[in-house]
Image (cartoon, rainbow, N blue to C red; front, top):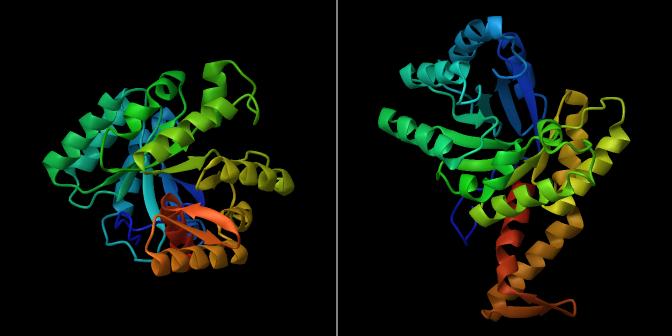
Amino acid sequence: MTKENQKPVQPRRSFIFAPGLRPELYPKALVSGADIVCVELEDGIAPHDKDEARDKTMALFAAPQADDGVERIVRINCLRSAAGLDDVQAILRSDTPPPALMLPKVVSPDEVIWLDDLLTERGHDTRLHIIIEMNAGLEAVFDIARASPRIDALFFGGVDMAADLRCKNAWEPLLYARSRVVHAAASAGVDAVDVPYLDLEDLEGMKVAARQARDLGFSGKGAIHPKQIADLNAVFTPCAEEIARARKVLAAFEEANTGLVVVDGKLIEKPVIREMHRILSIAARS
């Protein structure tokens, strides 16, 4: 918890999907090492299996979830689809809703506000994670990011975004789109999480892509297989040098009690305190 905003820092270095149709894989995903486990109801489920997957997914949350530091999310279907409306109705009927929902293909803040209102009326404290993967969503991302205090993160959906923008699904063609999502997330004080790396056999390429995302401002990146998770966590975990520097900077500000200090010959201003607290919080929870 930071002194700056008194908000707990949840590491979101990695996430992995667990298919809603196969609830037996959910416990395995929870011990995979991923910071986020997302039960899938959307693209990974065929239309004729949606009802069965929804029922099995809701049953997963009938019992209290373990306090193990793993963030649990359900990716529902697009709110502008019949399947998405069915998902929302199932959640509103439940007395034990999922802790968080991932909303795909969001293009307007109105979608988020509508769901927030329904969850509030029902008395659910369910959190929200928003996927920005459409051109219209990218255009409205700043308003979307501020649409609800329930929002904890923006997820960048590179595959759909590339198709919508008619560009190649690669780092440079999508750099503007990624940057805009990071900018909006930072402006709203929420995390930004990057799209999974799809080449399972290219772990070195994945690490390069993860470092690029980290340096741009993303908090983490998705995995398509458990064998990717350890490397993703390593990339997005502060190193010993960063941790030591954060401690040193915070100690200097505490001692000086001013708006700027000099650490190792470098002038550092007070706005960096929040980032130093974030580094130490993630290191502690990791």
